[in-house]
Image 1 (cartoon, helix red, strand yellow):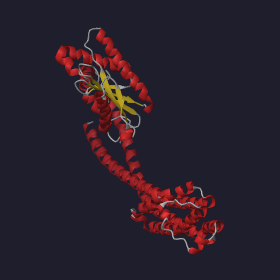
Image 2 (spheres, helix red, strand yellow; image 1 turned 180 degrees about the horizontal axis):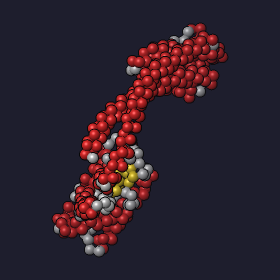
Image 3 (cartoon, one colour; image 1 turned 180 degrees about the vertical axis):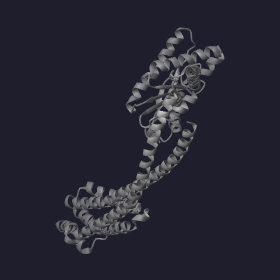
Image 4 (cartoon, one colour; image 1 turned 120 degrees about the vertical axis):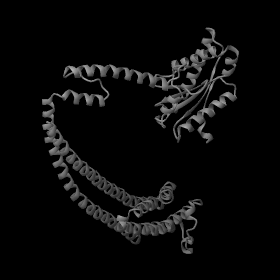
Length: 441
Protein backbone atom coordinates (compact mmCIF):
# COMPACT_ATOMS: atom_id res chain seq x y z
CA UNK A 1 0.00 0.00 0.00
CA UNK A 2 2.93 2.32 0.68
CA UNK A 3 4.19 1.82 -2.89
CA UNK A 4 0.71 2.50 -4.29
CA UNK A 5 0.45 5.70 -2.25
CA UNK A 6 3.89 6.82 -3.36
CA UNK A 7 3.13 6.11 -7.03
CA UNK A 8 -0.21 7.91 -6.76
CA UNK A 9 1.41 10.85 -5.03
CA UNK A 10 3.96 11.20 -7.82
CA UNK A 11 1.27 10.89 -10.50
CA UNK A 12 -0.94 13.43 -8.70
CA UNK A 13 1.92 15.93 -8.52
CA UNK A 14 2.54 15.60 -12.26
CA UNK A 15 -1.15 15.87 -13.18
CA UNK A 16 -1.68 18.77 -10.76
CA UNK A 17 1.32 20.62 -12.15
CA UNK A 18 -0.07 20.16 -15.66
CA UNK A 19 -3.55 21.25 -14.54
CA UNK A 20 -2.19 24.24 -12.67
CA UNK A 21 -0.12 25.46 -15.60
CA UNK A 22 -3.06 24.89 -17.97
CA UNK A 23 -5.39 26.74 -15.60
CA UNK A 24 -2.99 29.66 -15.46
CA UNK A 25 -2.84 29.73 -19.25
CA UNK A 26 -6.64 29.58 -19.41
CA UNK A 27 -6.95 32.44 -16.94
CA UNK A 28 -4.44 34.50 -18.87
CA UNK A 29 -6.20 33.69 -22.13
CA UNK A 30 -9.64 34.56 -20.74
CA UNK A 31 -8.22 37.72 -19.21
CA UNK A 32 -6.69 38.78 -22.50
CA UNK A 33 -9.92 38.06 -24.34
CA UNK A 34 -11.92 39.92 -21.71
CA UNK A 35 -9.58 42.90 -21.91
CA UNK A 36 -9.85 42.93 -25.68
CA UNK A 37 -13.65 42.72 -25.52
CA UNK A 38 -13.89 45.37 -22.81
CA UNK A 39 -11.57 47.62 -24.77
CA UNK A 40 -13.68 47.11 -27.89
CA UNK A 41 -16.89 47.92 -26.02
CA UNK A 42 -15.27 51.00 -24.53
CA UNK A 43 -13.96 52.14 -27.91
CA UNK A 44 -17.27 51.35 -29.62
CA UNK A 45 -19.12 53.38 -26.99
CA UNK A 46 -16.67 56.22 -27.54
CA UNK A 47 -17.43 56.16 -31.24
CA UNK A 48 -21.18 56.22 -30.57
CA UNK A 49 -20.66 59.05 -28.08
CA UNK A 50 -19.07 61.14 -30.80
CA UNK A 51 -22.02 60.59 -33.12
CA UNK A 52 -24.54 61.21 -30.31
CA UNK A 53 -22.76 64.43 -29.35
CA UNK A 54 -22.67 65.60 -32.96
CA UNK A 55 -26.36 64.78 -33.41
CA UNK A 56 -27.26 66.52 -30.16
CA UNK A 57 -25.44 69.67 -31.22
CA UNK A 58 -27.12 69.60 -34.65
CA UNK A 59 -30.55 69.09 -33.12
CA UNK A 60 -30.00 71.84 -30.53
CA UNK A 61 -28.73 74.32 -33.13
CA UNK A 62 -31.65 73.58 -35.48
CA UNK A 63 -34.23 73.92 -32.73
CA UNK A 64 -32.69 77.18 -31.62
CA UNK A 65 -32.86 78.82 -35.06
CA UNK A 66 -36.44 77.59 -35.40
CA UNK A 67 -37.72 78.62 -31.94
CA UNK A 68 -35.01 80.99 -30.55
CA UNK A 69 -35.49 79.38 -27.14
CA UNK A 70 -32.34 79.85 -25.04
CA UNK A 71 -32.61 76.32 -23.62
CA UNK A 72 -31.49 74.81 -26.90
CA UNK A 73 -28.48 77.15 -27.13
CA UNK A 74 -27.48 76.19 -23.59
CA UNK A 75 -27.77 72.49 -24.48
CA UNK A 76 -25.57 73.07 -27.52
CA UNK A 77 -22.76 74.82 -25.67
CA UNK A 78 -22.94 72.51 -22.67
CA UNK A 79 -22.10 69.62 -25.01
CA UNK A 80 -19.58 71.60 -27.07
CA UNK A 81 -17.64 73.24 -24.23
CA UNK A 82 -18.32 71.26 -21.05
CA UNK A 83 -19.33 67.64 -21.71
CA UNK A 84 -17.05 67.41 -24.79
CA UNK A 85 -17.90 63.79 -25.58
CA UNK A 86 -16.47 64.06 -29.08
CA UNK A 87 -13.00 65.07 -27.89
CA UNK A 88 -13.05 62.49 -25.07
CA UNK A 89 -13.96 59.73 -27.52
CA UNK A 90 -11.01 60.54 -29.78
CA UNK A 91 -8.70 60.85 -26.79
CA UNK A 92 -9.78 57.40 -25.56
CA UNK A 93 -9.07 55.72 -28.89
CA UNK A 94 -5.68 57.43 -29.15
CA UNK A 95 -4.55 55.35 -26.15
CA UNK A 96 -5.17 52.03 -27.94
CA UNK A 97 -2.38 51.18 -30.36
CA UNK A 98 -4.38 48.26 -31.82
CA UNK A 99 -7.10 50.70 -32.90
CA UNK A 100 -4.87 53.07 -34.86
CA UNK A 101 -6.93 52.83 -38.04
CA UNK A 102 -10.21 53.28 -36.14
CA UNK A 103 -8.68 56.25 -34.29
CA UNK A 104 -7.71 57.92 -37.55
CA UNK A 105 -11.25 57.52 -38.86
CA UNK A 106 -12.78 58.80 -35.64
CA UNK A 107 -10.37 61.73 -35.51
CA UNK A 108 -11.34 62.63 -39.09
CA UNK A 109 -15.01 62.54 -38.04
CA UNK A 110 -14.19 64.91 -35.17
CA UNK A 111 -12.39 67.32 -37.49
CA UNK A 112 -15.39 67.38 -39.83
CA UNK A 113 -17.72 67.88 -36.88
CA UNK A 114 -15.63 70.81 -35.63
CA UNK A 115 -15.66 72.40 -39.09
CA UNK A 116 -19.43 72.03 -39.12
CA UNK A 117 -19.57 74.07 -35.91
CA UNK A 118 -18.55 77.23 -37.81
CA UNK A 119 -21.77 77.03 -39.79
CA UNK A 120 -23.78 76.31 -36.62
CA UNK A 121 -22.19 79.23 -34.74
CA UNK A 122 -22.98 81.60 -37.62
CA UNK A 123 -26.58 80.43 -37.88
CA UNK A 124 -27.22 80.73 -34.13
CA UNK A 125 -25.61 84.18 -33.94
CA UNK A 126 -27.69 85.32 -36.91
CA UNK A 127 -30.89 83.99 -35.31
CA UNK A 128 -30.01 85.76 -32.05
CA UNK A 129 -29.53 89.05 -33.91
CA UNK A 130 -32.84 88.59 -35.72
CA UNK A 131 -34.62 88.09 -32.42
CA UNK A 132 -32.89 91.11 -30.90
CA UNK A 133 -30.99 89.18 -28.23
CA UNK A 134 -28.02 91.08 -26.87
CA UNK A 135 -26.61 88.39 -24.58
CA UNK A 136 -25.38 84.99 -25.69
CA UNK A 137 -22.45 82.67 -24.93
CA UNK A 138 -18.96 84.13 -25.28
CA UNK A 139 -18.18 81.65 -28.03
CA UNK A 140 -20.54 83.52 -30.36
CA UNK A 141 -18.87 86.90 -29.80
CA UNK A 142 -16.10 86.03 -32.25
CA UNK A 143 -18.54 85.20 -35.05
CA UNK A 144 -18.34 87.87 -37.75
CA UNK A 145 -21.66 88.48 -39.51
CA UNK A 146 -21.43 89.79 -43.05
CA UNK A 147 -22.62 93.29 -43.83
CA UNK A 148 -25.26 91.87 -46.11
CA UNK A 149 -26.71 89.70 -43.35
CA UNK A 150 -26.47 92.51 -40.80
CA UNK A 151 -28.51 94.80 -42.99
CA UNK A 152 -31.17 92.16 -43.71
CA UNK A 153 -34.52 92.21 -41.98
CA UNK A 154 -35.62 89.87 -39.19
CA UNK A 155 -37.37 87.36 -41.43
CA UNK A 156 -34.47 87.33 -43.89
CA UNK A 157 -31.98 86.71 -41.06
CA UNK A 158 -34.08 83.86 -39.71
CA UNK A 159 -34.52 82.35 -43.16
CA UNK A 160 -30.76 82.50 -43.77
CA UNK A 161 -30.01 80.92 -40.37
CA UNK A 162 -32.48 78.10 -40.95
CA UNK A 163 -31.25 77.47 -44.48
CA UNK A 164 -27.64 77.13 -43.25
CA UNK A 165 -28.65 74.23 -40.96
CA UNK A 166 -31.08 72.47 -43.29
CA UNK A 167 -29.60 72.91 -46.78
CA UNK A 168 -27.91 70.23 -48.87
CA UNK A 169 -24.37 71.31 -47.97
CA UNK A 170 -25.04 70.93 -44.24
CA UNK A 171 -26.66 67.52 -44.71
CA UNK A 172 -23.73 66.42 -46.89
CA UNK A 173 -21.24 67.29 -44.18
CA UNK A 174 -23.31 65.41 -41.60
CA UNK A 175 -23.36 62.39 -43.92
CA UNK A 176 -19.57 62.56 -44.22
CA UNK A 177 -19.24 62.49 -40.43
CA UNK A 178 -21.50 59.42 -40.25
CA UNK A 179 -19.49 57.73 -42.99
CA UNK A 180 -16.25 58.18 -41.05
CA UNK A 181 -18.00 56.93 -37.93
CA UNK A 182 -19.22 53.75 -39.61
CA UNK A 183 -15.75 53.17 -41.04
CA UNK A 184 -14.27 53.54 -37.55
CA UNK A 185 -16.73 51.00 -36.13
CA UNK A 186 -15.91 48.61 -38.99
CA UNK A 187 -12.20 48.87 -38.18
CA UNK A 188 -12.93 48.13 -34.52
CA UNK A 189 -14.99 45.04 -35.47
CA UNK A 190 -12.20 43.71 -37.67
CA UNK A 191 -9.59 44.22 -34.95
CA UNK A 192 -11.71 42.43 -32.36
CA UNK A 193 -12.47 39.46 -34.63
CA UNK A 194 -8.78 38.90 -35.38
CA UNK A 195 -7.89 39.09 -31.70
CA UNK A 196 -10.67 36.66 -30.73
CA UNK A 197 -9.73 34.12 -33.39
CA UNK A 198 -6.20 33.75 -32.02
CA UNK A 199 -7.41 33.63 -28.42
CA UNK A 200 -10.11 31.05 -29.23
CA UNK A 201 -7.63 28.63 -30.84
CA UNK A 202 -5.35 28.76 -27.81
CA UNK A 203 -8.22 28.37 -25.35
CA UNK A 204 -9.54 25.26 -27.12
CA UNK A 205 -6.16 23.55 -26.76
CA UNK A 206 -5.88 24.53 -23.09
CA UNK A 207 -9.42 23.31 -22.41
CA UNK A 208 -8.66 19.92 -23.94
CA UNK A 209 -5.55 19.52 -21.77
CA UNK A 210 -7.40 20.66 -18.65
CA UNK A 211 -10.28 18.22 -19.28
CA UNK A 212 -7.80 15.35 -19.72
CA UNK A 213 -6.05 16.30 -16.46
CA UNK A 214 -9.36 16.51 -14.62
CA UNK A 215 -10.48 13.09 -15.90
CA UNK A 216 -7.22 11.51 -14.72
CA UNK A 217 -7.53 13.22 -11.35
CA UNK A 218 -11.13 12.05 -10.94
CA UNK A 219 -10.21 8.47 -11.71
CA UNK A 220 -7.38 8.65 -9.22
CA UNK A 221 -9.57 10.27 -6.58
CA UNK A 222 -12.20 7.52 -6.89
CA UNK A 223 -9.51 4.91 -6.48
CA UNK A 224 -7.89 6.74 -3.54
CA UNK A 225 -11.26 7.24 -1.86
CA UNK A 226 -11.93 3.55 -1.99
CA UNK A 227 -8.42 2.86 -0.68
CA UNK A 228 -8.81 5.32 2.20
CA UNK A 229 -12.17 3.84 3.17
CA UNK A 230 -10.69 0.37 3.01
CA UNK A 231 -7.80 1.37 5.29
CA UNK A 232 -10.18 3.03 7.75
CA UNK A 233 -8.61 6.49 7.80
CA UNK A 234 -11.70 8.28 6.45
CA UNK A 235 -12.46 9.89 9.85
CA UNK A 236 -8.99 11.48 9.86
CA UNK A 237 -9.57 13.13 6.46
CA UNK A 238 -12.96 14.38 7.59
CA UNK A 239 -11.40 15.74 10.76
CA UNK A 240 -8.87 17.71 8.70
CA UNK A 241 -11.70 19.40 6.80
CA UNK A 242 -13.51 20.17 10.05
CA UNK A 243 -10.36 21.68 11.57
CA UNK A 244 -9.85 23.87 8.49
CA UNK A 245 -13.48 24.98 8.80
CA UNK A 246 -12.90 25.79 12.50
CA UNK A 247 -15.48 23.27 13.67
CA UNK A 248 -15.48 20.55 16.31
CA UNK A 249 -14.26 17.13 15.13
CA UNK A 250 -16.94 14.45 14.69
CA UNK A 251 -16.40 11.75 17.28
CA UNK A 252 -16.28 8.74 14.97
CA UNK A 253 -13.84 6.04 14.00
CA UNK A 254 -11.44 4.00 16.09
CA UNK A 255 -11.27 4.26 19.88
CA UNK A 256 -7.92 6.07 19.77
CA UNK A 257 -9.23 8.57 17.27
CA UNK A 258 -12.43 9.19 19.30
CA UNK A 259 -10.27 9.96 22.33
CA UNK A 260 -8.16 12.35 20.22
CA UNK A 261 -11.30 14.03 18.87
CA UNK A 262 -12.75 14.58 22.38
CA UNK A 263 -9.48 16.09 23.59
CA UNK A 264 -9.25 18.37 20.57
CA UNK A 265 -12.87 19.52 20.98
CA UNK A 266 -12.23 20.52 24.61
CA UNK A 267 -9.14 22.54 23.61
CA UNK A 268 -10.97 24.05 20.64
CA UNK A 269 -13.88 25.29 22.80
CA UNK A 270 -11.45 26.82 25.31
CA UNK A 271 -9.62 28.56 22.45
CA UNK A 272 -12.85 29.82 20.82
CA UNK A 273 -14.15 31.24 24.12
CA UNK A 274 -10.81 32.95 24.74
CA UNK A 275 -10.83 34.55 21.29
CA UNK A 276 -14.38 35.82 21.84
CA UNK A 277 -13.42 37.42 25.16
CA UNK A 278 -10.25 38.94 23.68
CA UNK A 279 -12.12 40.38 20.69
CA UNK A 280 -14.69 41.99 22.97
CA UNK A 281 -12.04 43.44 25.29
CA UNK A 282 -10.03 44.80 22.36
CA UNK A 283 -12.95 46.72 20.86
CA UNK A 284 -14.93 47.84 23.95
CA UNK A 285 -14.35 50.36 26.71
CA UNK A 286 -14.14 48.58 30.05
CA UNK A 287 -15.73 51.42 32.03
CA UNK A 288 -18.71 52.35 29.84
CA UNK A 289 -19.20 49.06 27.92
CA UNK A 290 -19.46 50.90 24.60
CA UNK A 291 -16.99 50.61 21.72
CA UNK A 292 -13.54 52.10 22.35
CA UNK A 293 -11.20 54.03 20.06
CA UNK A 294 -9.95 50.83 18.41
CA UNK A 295 -13.53 49.82 17.71
CA UNK A 296 -14.21 53.26 16.25
CA UNK A 297 -11.16 53.09 13.95
CA UNK A 298 -12.30 49.71 12.68
CA UNK A 299 -15.97 50.66 12.26
CA UNK A 300 -15.46 54.07 10.63
CA UNK A 301 -13.58 52.43 7.76
CA UNK A 302 -16.73 50.51 6.76
CA UNK A 303 -19.43 53.21 6.85
CA UNK A 304 -21.47 54.31 3.87
CA UNK A 305 -20.39 57.87 3.07
CA UNK A 306 -23.77 58.65 1.49
CA UNK A 307 -26.06 57.89 4.45
CA UNK A 308 -24.34 58.38 7.81
CA UNK A 309 -24.53 61.01 10.55
CA UNK A 310 -21.48 61.31 12.84
CA UNK A 311 -22.27 62.95 16.19
CA UNK A 312 -19.53 64.01 18.62
CA UNK A 313 -20.84 64.25 22.21
CA UNK A 314 -18.75 65.91 24.90
CA UNK A 315 -19.41 66.29 28.63
CA UNK A 316 -19.59 69.95 29.65
CA UNK A 317 -16.92 70.99 32.18
CA UNK A 318 -16.19 67.37 33.09
CA UNK A 319 -12.79 68.29 34.54
CA UNK A 320 -14.46 70.27 37.31
CA UNK A 321 -16.47 67.16 38.23
CA UNK A 322 -13.28 65.13 38.62
CA UNK A 323 -11.55 67.90 40.55
CA UNK A 324 -14.46 68.46 42.93
CA UNK A 325 -15.91 64.97 43.45
CA UNK A 326 -13.02 62.67 42.58
CA UNK A 327 -12.40 60.18 39.81
CA UNK A 328 -14.69 57.52 41.23
CA UNK A 329 -17.69 59.85 40.92
CA UNK A 330 -16.33 61.01 37.54
CA UNK A 331 -16.39 57.40 36.32
CA UNK A 332 -20.01 57.05 37.44
CA UNK A 333 -20.87 60.21 35.52
CA UNK A 334 -19.24 58.79 32.39
CA UNK A 335 -21.20 55.57 32.83
CA UNK A 336 -24.39 57.60 33.22
CA UNK A 337 -23.62 59.52 30.01
CA UNK A 338 -22.91 56.34 28.02
CA UNK A 339 -26.07 54.66 29.40
CA UNK A 340 -28.15 57.71 28.44
CA UNK A 341 -26.71 57.75 24.91
CA UNK A 342 -27.46 54.06 24.41
CA UNK A 343 -31.02 54.46 25.73
CA UNK A 344 -31.77 57.35 23.37
CA UNK A 345 -30.20 56.13 20.13
CA UNK A 346 -31.29 53.09 18.09
CA UNK A 347 -29.91 49.60 18.60
CA UNK A 348 -28.39 49.71 15.11
CA UNK A 349 -26.51 52.95 15.92
CA UNK A 350 -22.90 52.60 17.06
CA UNK A 351 -21.69 54.33 20.25
CA UNK A 352 -17.97 54.88 20.96
CA UNK A 353 -15.92 56.40 23.73
CA UNK A 354 -13.02 57.97 21.87
CA UNK A 355 -11.55 60.10 24.65
CA UNK A 356 -11.82 60.84 28.36
CA UNK A 357 -15.26 62.45 28.25
CA UNK A 358 -15.80 62.39 24.49
CA UNK A 359 -18.23 60.04 22.78
CA UNK A 360 -19.07 59.46 19.12
CA UNK A 361 -22.32 58.09 17.67
CA UNK A 362 -22.57 56.74 14.11
CA UNK A 363 -26.14 56.74 12.74
CA UNK A 364 -26.09 54.73 9.52
CA UNK A 365 -28.73 54.45 6.77
CA UNK A 366 -30.15 57.91 7.43
CA UNK A 367 -30.50 61.19 5.51
CA UNK A 368 -30.46 64.90 6.29
CA UNK A 369 -34.10 64.77 7.41
CA UNK A 370 -32.90 63.11 10.65
CA UNK A 371 -31.45 66.44 11.82
CA UNK A 372 -34.50 67.37 13.92
CA UNK A 373 -34.67 63.84 15.39
CA UNK A 374 -31.00 63.97 16.41
CA UNK A 375 -31.58 67.32 18.10
CA UNK A 376 -34.41 65.81 20.17
CA UNK A 377 -32.20 62.87 21.14
CA UNK A 378 -29.54 65.21 22.56
CA UNK A 379 -32.28 66.98 24.53
CA UNK A 380 -33.42 63.58 25.86
CA UNK A 381 -29.87 62.73 26.92
CA UNK A 382 -29.59 65.96 28.89
CA UNK A 383 -33.00 65.26 30.42
CA UNK A 384 -31.86 61.80 31.53
CA UNK A 385 -28.68 63.30 33.01
CA UNK A 386 -30.82 65.84 34.87
CA UNK A 387 -32.80 62.95 36.36
CA UNK A 388 -29.54 61.29 37.44
CA UNK A 389 -28.65 64.47 39.36
CA UNK A 390 -31.80 64.00 41.40
CA UNK A 391 -30.50 60.52 42.31
CA UNK A 392 -27.28 61.94 43.73
CA UNK A 393 -24.87 62.35 40.80
CA UNK A 394 -23.19 65.73 40.24
CA UNK A 395 -24.85 68.07 37.73
CA UNK A 396 -23.62 67.40 34.20
CA UNK A 397 -24.78 68.14 30.68
CA UNK A 398 -23.50 67.33 27.21
CA UNK A 399 -22.87 69.29 24.06
CA UNK A 400 -22.89 67.75 20.61
CA UNK A 401 -21.84 68.50 17.06
CA UNK A 402 -23.10 66.55 14.07
CA UNK A 403 -22.14 66.24 10.41
CA UNK A 404 -23.72 64.31 7.53
CA UNK A 405 -21.41 62.17 5.41
CA UNK A 406 -22.77 63.05 1.97
CA UNK A 407 -20.00 64.48 -0.20
CA UNK A 408 -17.30 63.66 2.38
CA UNK A 409 -13.99 62.29 1.11
CA UNK A 410 -12.61 60.76 4.33
CA UNK A 411 -13.65 59.68 7.80
CA UNK A 412 -11.30 62.26 9.35
CA UNK A 413 -12.98 65.04 7.40
CA UNK A 414 -16.38 63.89 8.66
CA UNK A 415 -15.13 63.85 12.27
CA UNK A 416 -13.53 67.29 11.88
CA UNK A 417 -16.81 68.75 10.64
CA UNK A 418 -18.74 67.34 13.58
CA UNK A 419 -16.01 68.55 15.94
CA UNK A 420 -16.22 72.03 14.41
CA UNK A 421 -19.99 72.06 15.02
CA UNK A 422 -19.36 70.93 18.62
CA UNK A 423 -16.98 73.86 19.09
CA UNK A 424 -19.78 76.24 18.07
CA UNK A 425 -22.00 74.82 20.81
CA UNK A 426 -19.21 75.15 23.39
CA UNK A 427 -18.57 78.70 22.28
CA UNK A 428 -22.24 79.69 22.63
CA UNK A 429 -23.06 78.37 26.07
CA UNK A 430 -22.87 74.53 25.90
CA UNK A 431 -25.73 72.05 26.55
CA UNK A 432 -27.05 71.70 23.02
CA UNK A 433 -26.25 70.55 19.52
CA UNK A 434 -25.11 72.20 16.31
CA UNK A 435 -25.01 70.75 12.78
CA UNK A 436 -22.18 71.44 10.41
CA UNK A 437 -23.21 74.06 7.86
CA UNK A 438 -22.10 72.71 4.49
CA UNK A 439 -22.80 76.12 2.89
CA UNK A 440 -19.72 77.50 4.65
CA UNK A 441 -17.39 75.34 2.52
